[in-house]
Image 1 (cartoon, helix red, strand yellow):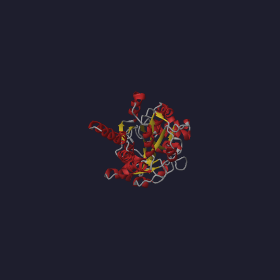
Image 2: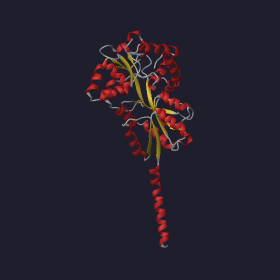
Image 3: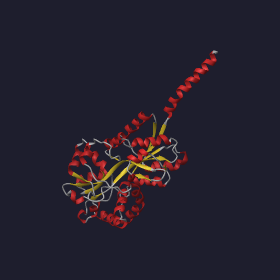
Length: 347
């Protein structure tokens, strides 16, 4: 065998030996995410370490991501889409941006009412973490019994005490869409009118702003996602500790249908080029390890009932009865809710 032939064979052998390693290194997952929490970095790093699949991430707000997906069409590189709020997930499903996933792991670990677009080929999207829509009140002015249901926010006794962020914010739209399932459209609109009549000021700011407004005495009661309050509970800042000391938290409707919970959810993009990796990533998000990151890192509740958490704030807030209305129905109600908000003047 001459020297040239030997070199060629050696090169070919080396190429064949390195090919599997190169393919493993080239395995990627293109993630479009509306989550912007630093604690999620550990999620991505652990997935890559466990699977060898590298994550390319695009981050933007929900509206920006959905607009980008529509503009990219079939050329989109997105494999997985992560959005915050059931209404946004439902809308993306209606716009044909997802594809169904049939996974025994996801069906076993994620409750049916926290999945959307369910059909013979699987669900179109899956809740991966939840947050309760709680009521925060001023302990110097009110008792927990005064605000232990969402309906009481419209009671005349709370006139001039209620604060919320914009009614059209997805967190509130989903809450109101949930109430439609329980109360019906007519009663929900009457309730919204009562909430508007009870407002201490025009809606503004985010959920943390509402909590601080209660603590300052500007408001007597407010609506907030649970993880905003849990962040204040875990803070070492004196001003945050003072807010927690002045305020109390109620999980509404424990004597009836339970507290409304919203989700952060994930889906496989309609034109995913790396579908197997995408499904594997969704299954990873439903694992105990990932569920614990959601709870301990960002103060969210796991969707998997058996997932462990040692978050001191969540433990302190205690267990609560959550509603089980299908989250997809909540999302579907939000268009009608927006019309109600316009009619009653809920800005």
